[in-house]
Length: 347
Image (cartoon, rainbow, N blue to C red; front, side, top):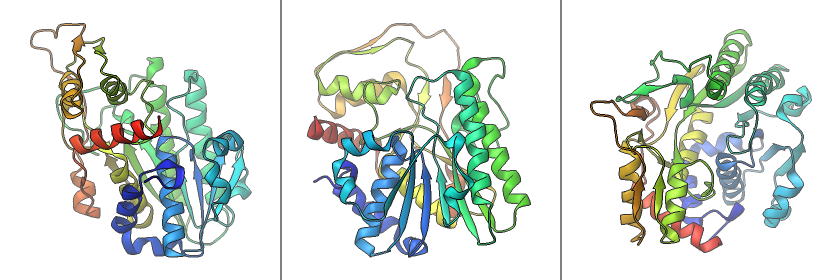
């Protein structure tokens, strides 16, 4: 059964239960959401609508989108959803009045799927975050802002899980680093605002890799491409040597962690958000085929260099477990199955 934004009902019920009494902080309140039409945004918006309806919170969510009309056309049920207000525009031009009546804000804008120039990505990260900070700093009421940052702020790492104290950084001379550098500056802007502006509390979610309904299966997300190939019984093609390490968090767990952070995370504190199980890209391809009983082969184009350490993009999530009590509740195998089941259902 699918519910708001075509999300699985069982996942929305799980999010509702897991966030539990913290939802009460939204009762009668307004929240601003940027990036509400992206992968993470769909899960936040869908789970908000579900909680608002099930708990009678009488809350309102204001969603910023460059093209709300086309998004609503894709999800017509949104026209009947109460408590959802659409704000058309680019986050870089956000009016400071946009959050004047909002107790909460989640800044999730920065499209990593659309084809944008490095300069545009950097500008959106920095100027967009500054606009959100300014909008949330007006007035005297207490406010909470959750910034969705990225594991890309750590730059290239090898072999080990990445803790929040890691001091590595992206290469500033590489154009591919603009997203990570932009998120680093975004974190700094939020941190400075939290320190300088009374009543504004900020928490930072450093997001890594995810899997679940609405993850694009035809873009640059390896696990999405693998799942689509497996559904079609096609061969999985890996252009590299298959050694890079990744971990994946299921989208329902992601939503639980983000909502809990918004409501409870300490001020000016960053937390890694991601899966615990490290797996190489090559092994992941075989795992997807095995879990989905696919008939295609795994074809790896390159041979690993002898003695080379694999590039790793795997977070340590010990801090969020010890400080906020948040743990993984959906295994990688179940996450793969649920994503494939959803993809088949809506195709």
